[in-house]
Length: 95
Image 1 (tube, rainbow, N blue to C red):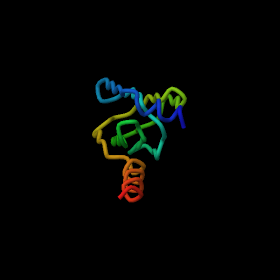
Image 2: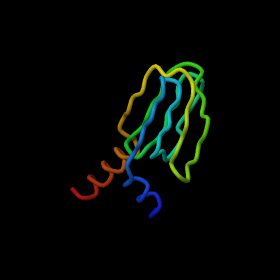
Image 3: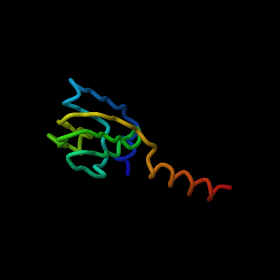
Image 4: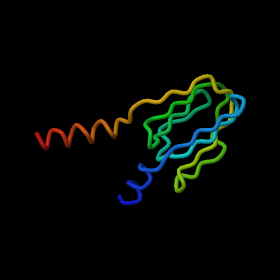
């Protein structure tokens, strides 16, 4: 749990080159992936990459790093379901 807490307190870096290569830090989990969509749990929420011929070139969860390749058409962030669930449970306990 201590390792998970320290990972969530670190920053995040997203580098994209020519809409074809992405390097992202702060990754905690791979939610799903196929050649049209990759969804990653990060310390900033869920990151969704949509495009064509997408694939994970490198994944190092111990360091929270991922490298993606393919034609990237969209990047979107969503709040993590884990954060919402944890907050709602805690708020119900301390009402």
